[in-house]
Image (cartoon, rainbow, N blue to C red; front, side, top):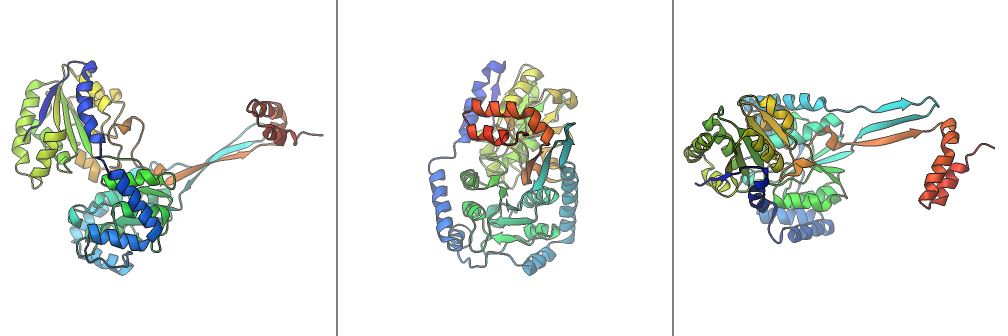
Length: 434
């Protein structure tokens, strides 16, 4: 296994790293065209298209219904060992507590002239949640279900529809159903891929359309979300996962390597980067990566990920290292330095920040509470984690008093006429006192 090492002497050498990372943005030719065809087929043929795609990609003998019954959800949940259900429950409690702190309230303010202005915060009527099955349903992303469903529930969304690909035998992994059962979610569909996104957006005979779609997925799912955006809301356009670790000489190289590998095992497009100002630490991390990778069940995936998208960047000082981190704007940023709190004020762009030697990415991804659906590929420069706000909309309230209208009528009409909108001006002037 080879994990490249790159030396950057200053911020001006950033293009060396940027040009290499740019390759992760290219999904390859044909993805968008294929997804457009899928969306068109689902709109035209509805459930028939969903069954056909599911047979082709997930379950050769798949047969309706698409909806998992409440009884099946309950039975599957009961097959999950109680200790596993308790762990899921504990994680759910932490996630719920964090997201309850995000809940915004409607507000109103009154002006001296009697006008009332405000903002009404309302949940959306329905949310579609995509939960990847993972390797044919054998590695279910239970945490993604929790991370998407709980903020929607905290927001007050009355209808949650989960789509997840079935296993080869047509069933849904019982751990996913156990998580749904724990959260009292009854609408779970045995359908995944880009076709499920199309169904959630436009609706079929079995799946009613939703207002917003959230959840991670592969390049086809992500492309489908991008193409239906506007018809429905989406959480974000997310690409392959990534971690960047800022480390100084105080860092434990074995721990840093373990954290890089925890990212690399996701898939071959995952990116694991360590930026350090210590050359000896960089070499120790390389040795640890070689040693630890060989012992992983997903060693082949992790090794290829590190070879293609992993790197150890050596900088002359921590200041340049921080500048590199801000330029990458990573999904996950670990600060493994002597005083991470002294570094934090200089971090401008990151989806989530993990502070200190005892906050590996996995702590946040599974259990701490903050959301793990995060912006990737540098979009942390302008995008944020999935949150309660993803499932809310805000309506402005205007209750102008007669006094306000009379006092400001001429100014409002003047602005309207500046824009050439005479009817706007006259609609205000029609209310002039006689």
